[in-house]
Length: 132
Image 1 (cartoon, rainbow, N blue to C red):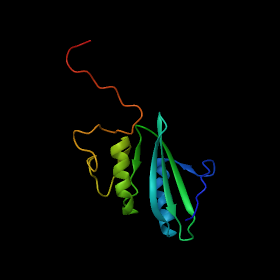
Image 2 (tube, rainbow, N blue to C red):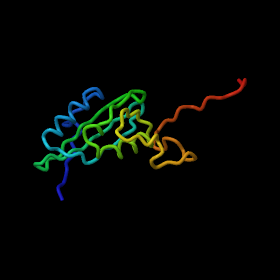
Image 3 (cartoon, one colour):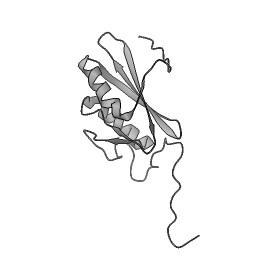
Image 4 (cartoon, rainbow, N blue to C red):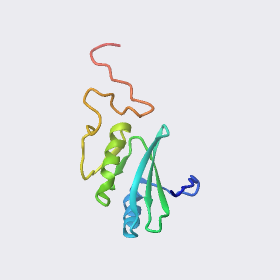
């Protein structure tokens, strides 16, 4: 098993707008998508994408984004990402758009489940009625 050293300072941080271009470049080099991770760094998210090149080198892309910002799906380039993207969308509420297969936040959670259970800070529920 290859040990992967994580050096957060060495990994590129890119914007959501640059994500698809970077993934297309990696895919053209034969890299395969291995997984992605979402970190709730309140008040923002950090999404870490891991790819393995044919040389077995691991490449990490880090995307930092505001919680209300949209993140383009990479599933149009690498379909294997669709399950992880749906899971992150469902559990954290990351606004991932243009998914190749969209489970509408019902891939793992039921209608009765706590919504976005891994989100650190949830919006306060709006009160209904004419109260204070």
